[in-house]
Every structure is written in structure tokens, then in C-alpha cells.
Image (cartoon, rainbow, N blue to C red):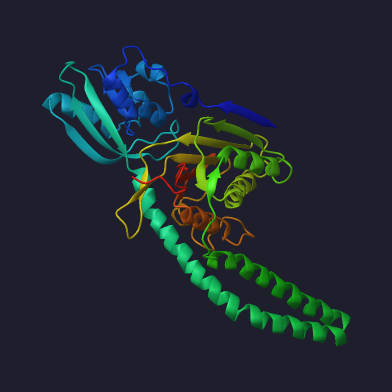
Length: 381
């Protein structure tokens, strides 16, 4: 089964009533901004606030701010403080996550009275989650470099002795009894299995420059979807939510297919035989996300966001921070190298990948640089 829909945010960029220069500036901000009236009702919002709460501006304006934040949220108390003091107030690292907006959403909050409209307060939310994830991404890259050294050592120190062990077992097999022949066959099979594992790890030691070009991410996802629907994902409903105006990504197409095939396969395996299993593939343009380049003052913009989301049982909370480390897996027979390879490939492309998980809502978010015509490099700022 398959469904397709295009996100409203991607197709509707019409100015709202009374839109002018101030509203254009607010809508250009990457941070959610809300105006809250004296009765707690939302007066106005910018585009980023719509994306943060995953609700349209028209719906937000009809409701009280309390309906979109956790019960007893510090945000409500901050608005009251700003009203009592008639001065700006701030609070850092506040969780505004609810089942509506997908779990943990750590933000810094700034509330200030709007002098032009008595009783109305401006609320600015600066999401900390992305910054924290970028810090963790450096750890993932360090883990990938550790695997690179480990793979080179394993290839040299393990594969050669294994070939000798396998050869000796084959010689013994010729003169062994039927009962002993089963043991020699077991030795050969296990030796072959270890060689395959080492071969998979040798991918990490490949440090050759990546050949990159302008890639249409939707053609990549379409290819991955076709592979899934004819194999491991035939019993899962795949829903696409694409921004059709998305610019190309600067990447190696084959490696992107490898990344998203891995993520979609993981999602399908997590869902298992559930009758209502769904995998959502979405793309969006998210300006304002930048990643520092080690050893340089330059920053790479990562405005392209690709998400693979499933409604499986989720990842154990204690494993989420280590999910991209090698040999960490939730599968009984998994090697724990698939997501480590995903982190390495995306890291080599100058992007970041992170996981958010809770029961029936696990998503992998990939942020990558866009292709800039003329220079073939990632967009820097």
C-alpha cells in the first residue's frame, strides 16, 4: 500500500492579511515567535512557530497557549512574570515536548511585553535540540574514525590467520568421519562469517575522496521506496511528504541510496508484522542550521532536511545516545555496523544525522548541504 501527499508548508507561501516588512522579517527567522494576549490566547505566529507546533497559524490563533505546551509548563509562568514585571524574562533548557509535537523539544525561552499592544507578549523559542545534536555528532564522527583504525587492524591481523584456519579445516575434512566432518564444516562456515564481518568493516577504512554532484533527493528516495516495496517493506505502508521545490543536495547518489536503504530497512524491521505499519519519508527546507568546520572559522549551512519516520515500538531510551556507535544494535542478530556506516557517510558529506525515538514514533533526521551551482561545493556562510 502506498500514499502520497505534499506538505502544505511547501506549497503555500502566501502573505497573510496585513503582511508587510515586519511580518516578512518574522517569517524569515528560523526561531518560533508567538504573540500571546492577556487572556493567554495566541494572537499571531510566524512560519517557524507553525513548523514547531506542527499546526497552522489559523488553528494556533483560535486556542490558548496552554493547549500546545505540557501541563504546568514554565512557559506559562514566564508569561505571567513578564506581565507582572512589565519587563523581559528568560528561561533556558525548557522541555516543551508533547505527544502532539513528537516528544522532547528542549528550548530557550525569551518573553517580552509588546509595548505597542498592552497586554500582549512576544514569546521567542530557540530550540536547543539541534545544537545538542551537533555536539553529539562530533562524537559520532570520532567513533567512525576509531572504527577506521580498527577496521584496518582487523583486516591485517584477522583475515590472514582465518584463511589458514579454513584451509586446515578443509584438509581435516577429507579424512574425518561423518560426525567430525560436521565440526570441520562448522569451522569453515564460522571463518567465512568472520571474513564477511571484517569485509563490512573495511568500508570504514576507505578514505578516498567522495565524488559528489547535484543529486535530486526525491529520485533517491523513490528508488529506495521501490526496493523496499518489492522486498523487506512489502507489508508496510510508505507515505511520502515532499517539498517539490527543494534544491539539489551536494552528494554521491550511490552512497545516499545506501544510507536511506539502511534507514528504511531498519524502520521496516522495527515495525515487523504489525498490520498498521507505516514509514513516512519527508523532505523540507530548514534554513538557519549551520555546522562549524573543524580547523576552520567557516560554517557549512545544512538547510536540507530528510526524515525517515516509523510507528514501530521505538529504540530503548538508554541506547539512543549511542545508536550510531559501532557494535550497538537492537537486533538479536545484528552486527551494529549499519548505523555507524550511515553516520560515517553523512559525516563525510558534511552533514549530520540524529535519532529521536518514543513508542510508535521513531525518526531519523538527516541534515545536509545544498548544491550551489558553479562551484560544486557545500554552501558556506
